Length: 410
Length: 90
Ligand SMILES: Cc1ncc(COP(=O)(O)O)c(C=O)c1O
Image 1 (cartoon, rainbow over the protein chains, first blue to last red):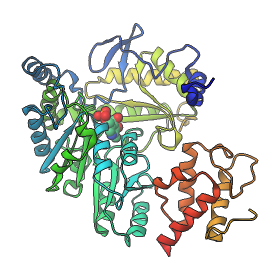
Image 2 (image 1 turned 45 degrees about the vertical axis):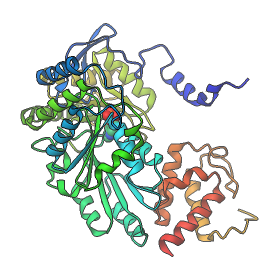
Image 3 (image 1 turned 90 degrees about the vertical axis):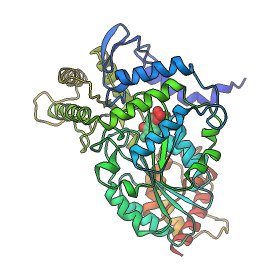
Image 4 (image 1 turned 30 degrees about the vertical axis):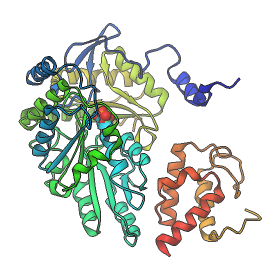
């Protein structure tokens, strides 16, 4: 008899062959107890967290905790309603004003997650006669968003402005708006978009808009943490900025800002805005408090970058080959998924948690041991991470015995 | 490929598709008009993406992701690619 789940046969086979041996499953990690922004008890072991996207460590910021507690007590555990029904409180509007003010755009819309922000905007903003030109390495939420909409979807080569230029040139005879979609910092390898080159290409053509997903760069890049556009001085050239509260803002939720005069119409058009409940008041309050801390967080950003440089240098020194941009996302490439799982388990046994990322969620089909750093990491913690990486690589025969030679990784 | 249906497909595009596809074909299957990417060539979604990117380079075109779900066979791809070549370079 056919079973409903038969269609997952190849998924089941892959899971069973990778993690079916009863060993620690990278996709079923349970935090028994969260000790701080950078430490947790996992399987009874004291573990350094180096894969949480909690870039500024704001999850326990006293101001944000207090704001959340106050809102929780005053307004309850949830709104039990959509933004377009009973789910917009004054806190949601205040957060939207704070976002548009912070990012220097006229309008902001808050969504229930960053994933839903991308689904909303990308499925709705462009129609059947329009074109989306997306970087091939964009996040799954961007792929899902464009697939939900009706626009023609064209991918350009990752971070390749010349390829984008070629594709726009071929479309220039065609009517319809064109929306370029990029990310400030790419989530998997931590590399930045060549924003100046992309803006230069955009300006060559008519009816072209630019959207940047600043999920991993908000709070991280720019003097005030406004992301890649601030860092390179091109904020006015980015028409739409999407972001999330689930990384440097330290809670959950998403947003989009823009100065388009009709931006607010999207509230009546985006289904993932209309047909889901709004964020709970406590989350909204902590997001607003954390946003203020992001803006004044120059010292946190310095610590974060110091940590990023320290980990990057430490891993390169022991022979790992890493990507060029030094950023708070540091990804080590494993030769295949099986080695990736063994490596990940070795790190866990050594008390270090990182993300294991497998194809197809990764660029170039890489298997990645993806670290993300936190401003709250100490140099001692990072030295420990480097030491455990070295030990595990050594036990798997992945680093040459003599130093100086490059590893068989990457 | 033999006995091709008269679908208006360009012979140049057909040759280009076959040439690029052969570099991705890890099976013994001989490429024909009706060869199916998933069932006959064991292409998964990742390989499809890589193959399409290579074909885009070869023909200097953009293949919108939207057309991919409707393409099951080599012949269907040749027809779709012909249309795009005519639109973008015609
Ligand atoms: C680039 C990018 N966009 C969007 C998201 C989704 O964010 P959220 O966790 O708020 O749904 C993520 C995070 O996973 C991301 O990396």
